[in-house]
Length: 97
Image (tube, rainbow, N blue to C red; front, side, top):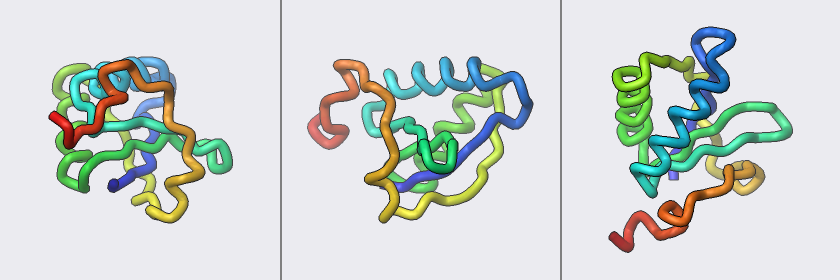
């Protein structure tokens, strides 16, 4: 897994970004969204840097929303990130399809 910490490029877009990320998670079972309670950062997880950048580009094109990438997330800390509740479709492994 590869992770990025992100934040809305525009203040006030937090709710819209959350909705857009939920829809993208429903479409791609390998794309996960979480929240680090310690740093209060929104974390997106995917198969690699390219996968995450494609997902962010989809969000920008389809929902007219953009985010700022704060930093690449260290893999060792990933266990401390609380993933948001997955939909039943997301609970399947992305490799089982």
